[in-house]
Image (cartoon, rainbow, N blue to C red; front, side, top):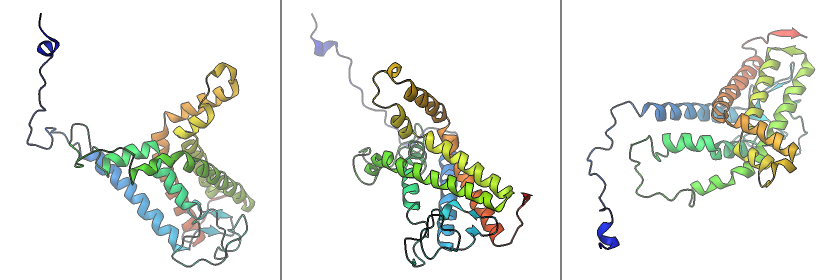
Length: 265
């Protein structure tokens, strides 16, 4: 009778392929487009966050989300919806310095964005059947990727900031009703869809439940969040676009480059 060692399937080494990949399609297009899309948003948002102009329209009460909440004495009169508990800020500090780092952290640690920039920027891997340039893989156990584990905490702050953005959109109706109001509200609705479709939100609503039947309310909420979660990727990209559109519209209206289309004054 043959021993176990004799009947074991022979171990074969990996195929030795000199080429980085044998793929003949344009596999590099999706990572490239993702990099360009994310880079465009980061550059635009970064520049706008430091400009300190065109972020508040006093006539129609439009406040861009890139400057919300504005809590400094450096804020234009009327733009500080929650007062100014902070004094003057030097020019190298964004007026929304309390919210922007958390929103950036929320986006960077988002499960969809991890997939997007792991492939397009971190090259881990850049595409299926394409070797990654890293010598070894340590996952999210070391810097800088270990920060990804803080996603659930960024979610709590992002939820609060979305509430603030909602308040900003409501305050804008004090100036009447115009196209800018529709843009602000549309942006907030999509921000809620993105925030609530987050995987951390699913865990908050339905995590650690052993019996859904004993928690019908939480189960119903969890099912609704789960439905949104299937479109988390779409909401992630849509909100980047609506954030830029909202900011650009407020910028152009507040600087009198264009006139707001008014429905009710």
